[in-house]
Image (cartoon, rainbow, N blue to C red; front, side):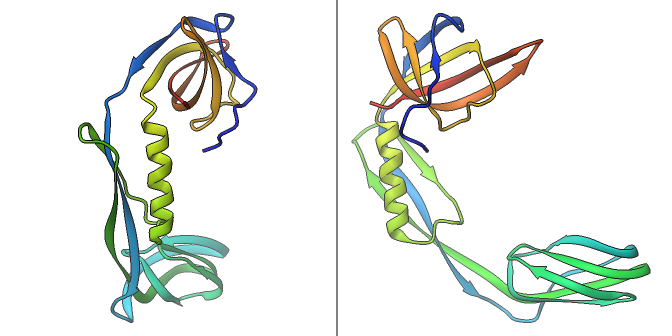
Length: 206
């Protein structure tokens, strides 16, 4: 998320109704999963199928499970090139008719541990699980960021005349009956009825 406000204000000028201020529930703790990956069985068949190919075509195949050290073989055509990823591969095949494809690889297994950041004695626990988080120091930084955002309990519900440059995570200005605030956009939905209207939610940054 960005921390500097964008040049955008929800105000009486563009609001259909005054932003409504609410208090969210207290935050008790933050949990962030840390993923560890290791190799499983080798030579595992992760894709097998037959597809029609006319000329030279590029196909994207999803594996039955995540894998590394992947290789593909084709029958009834020529494998021109291949790009392999953890969950899929992109194959360029030249043929005229049905082509049988087999993809094998080494299973990519994972285990998780959970980093917990205690915040208060009462309230809710916020849990984040993202397979891209693989280091404890990254999990700790993420947990601290979540804590810094969610301990600001003032939230706003808004409905306003909008444009499409805004996205969730942007920091905007909100004019309300108590003054002006900067807030993270946490929920956003656009509607088009001859012009753009948005409804959404935001959380104060301080």
